[in-house]
Image 1 (cartoon, one colour):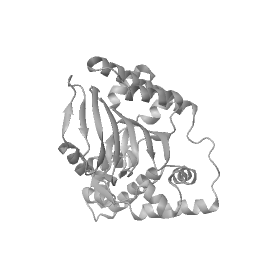
Image 2 (spheres, rainbow, N blue to C red):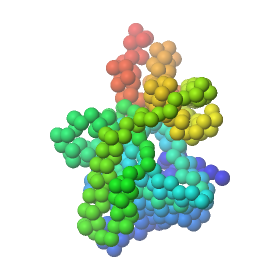
Image 3 (tube, rainbow, N blue to C red):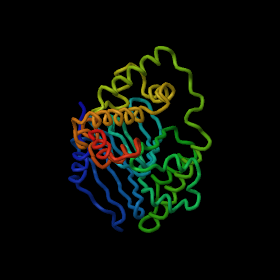
Image 4 (tube, helix red, strand yellow):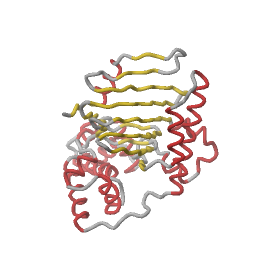
Length: 317
């Protein structure tokens, strides 16, 4: 059984969970309802623009949260997962920019321990100062109308040590915040160094003809489902390929990510709709899956160099 929630419903659900604060008032702890599973979330506000969440959970049912297009801060998550006689560790790193609609999933019957960090771009830019021209940094600092950077991988030994130090932090109050923030920046430094030294396209195996055919089939599914696209895992299952090969292969075949491809076709379809004169800007945005007219207008302007309303009026003139 899968518990499916919208992003808003999930946020409301979290707000309804009873929570307590530590004696120094620095950490908020929320326990999962026993009907859903076992676990808790710890929130540690380090400073304005930097939020840390440490979570340990084992759910009774799969959880699927439907997320809409949204402006995204810098974010990284380190996750340890155990269950079914196996264990794994991985990280996800997301830059600032436009996060596309998709489904966030938490699997059932696996004990998951995660460290999640959100950093607002202005905080990071202030931290790096004059080094903001570094090409690796510029690649993941993108405006809110441009599809965000994403990277996943296996944590290095140094990353694992830093994560374990955060999980076992022995301090409280100001000392705790200072210690945990130092580990946040240590992990960010290690992630940036990983980007420098381990290109995401290194050692990419050649695709078989059958794989290429499946990837082209996946692209057709995306074009048919612009408004409600499947998640990466759902898309991989639909075409009979694993999600890692789909991600890597999609970039090989089309020169972009799965959701980059989806975004491009959404923009092209919206342009065609506006050119036809049959739909308003709001209706065109909704027709291609944008929940926010503002995000759509910004993305359209970046893609075509003109506001969608101006473009539509120009077509009718």
